Image (tube, rainbow, N blue to C red; front, side, top):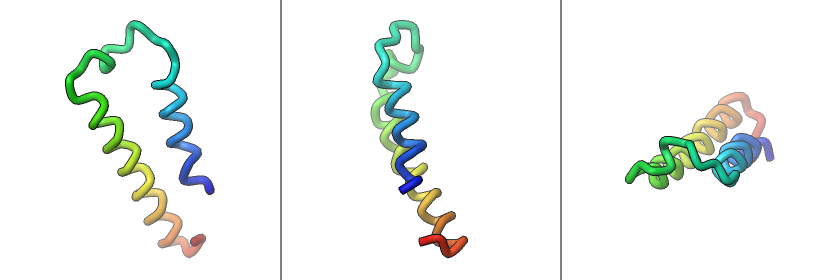
Length: 54
């Protein structure tokens, strides 16, 4: 399902071993990342449902 494509992309970026990503040191970066995952999924599901693709 194409809902997982953006989530895979975001997880792939954060799964790399970067040292110099400023958000890796932020206190709330992990919860914000999960909120982004959930929001992306919900927006895509709502869009697909509106277009009657689901």
